Length: 327
Ligand SMILES: Nc1nc2c(ncn2[C@@H]2O[C@H](COP(=O)(O)OP(=O)(O)OP(=O)(O)O)[C@@H](O)[C@H]2O)c(=O)[nH]1
Ligand SMILES: [Mg+2]
Image (cartoon, rainbow, N blue to C red; front, side, top):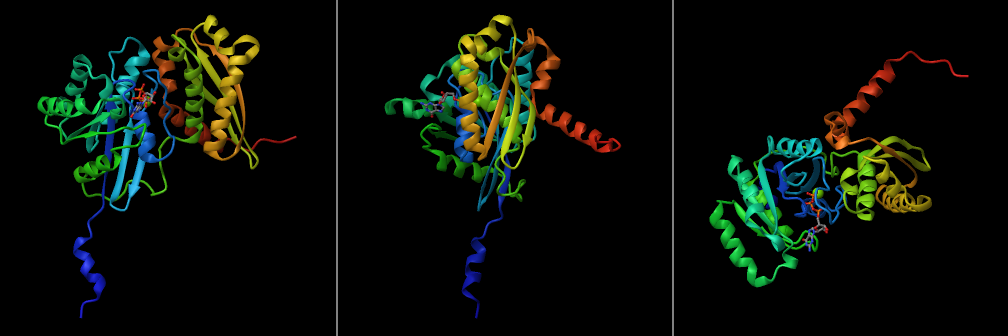
């Protein structure tokens, strides 16, 4: 007699796994979606466009397999070395993926903006899913005609309306993705949610608080570097340098009697303490790096993948040094 468990065997599917890039215009809600899918904050979100500067992976593991999402900077016509670097990040993110996720802000569709996206879909040889985000802000009557219009413009594998903010429509989206991904073993351990080390998340959280507190050009002229990230059993000590492009910006960032910098530091520290579940001691320094956005070398240094390489080289050098005498 066959044991009852053998009956379930034919239904058992091989796991699926693959890489899925999230691509769209600035402010479409890519990072909000990534955080929602992963179930925790790994990418910063602000109401200002061009927040994300580097690609970040967010990993979703379920019984049926693993999806490695890649958040990317918003698509735009670059007018600086920084902008060009951001667009190279998008290109790098698309390389070798299994599925392209194009995301549109459905509350602000515009022919010109969408054509840039459709071009991406046309150039990508694999399958593309179109995600219509922010449907919480779209009158219901507009949704079906919008889906109809997009389906005529390109042969999408699926068009899925969602609200990344409210968390609606995400299960159907995940279902569609798993339907397309190839059979594969998971790429990452099941408890890993991102490839971005905490050191760089810390820099990003500080940048998020600063972008939210600042206006006009300043959010775009800001770069955040972690100089020291020291974990002790009781405390995480983080020293950070905030770069701006001019003295006038430095003044605004520091604020009257240091009030602005203090506010940014306090907000960032509180969030980091809760995210990393430890007490944090945060020191912020402001430095002027004149016109850094036009300097390809400085722009490259901004990329955490590049900084990580530097850190591991430094560590290797250190371990090769002969032991020094201590006093
Ligand atoms: N109403 C509404 N707002 C949303 C939704 N998703 C994101 N937002 C808001 O849209 C703004 C931009 O969100 P982000 O996730 O930073 O957008 P992004 O595409 O990552 O932007 P960049 O990194 O600048 O390219 C934020 O204010 C979000 O709160 C949504 O589903 N509904
Ligand atoms: Mg983003």
